[in-house]
Length: 103
Image (cartoon, rainbow, N blue to C red):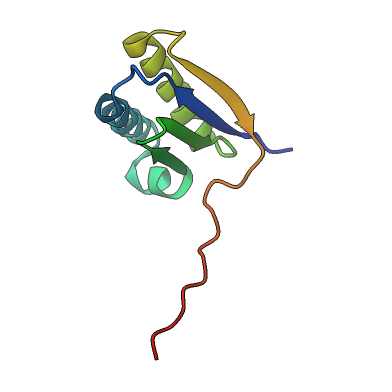
């Protein structure tokens, strides 16, 4: 059994720029724990600034630590009631859309 992906949806009052900075801080912290290479391989995530949504893949040890760091930092910075979290059964990265090839 693998761990799920977690989807965080933040209140509109949370500045997207600060949320992005907290995501970078979380990534740097997990790099300190697991190293740059392993983090690049195993800390899969997406961030949609417009909707203030973050999805983190927690199916690896690195991903679980990244998830823990992110939720800890965001709860402390923005408050525990500034977001909701849910398990996301969907894929982390959408399939690329087929684009017509220019002739």
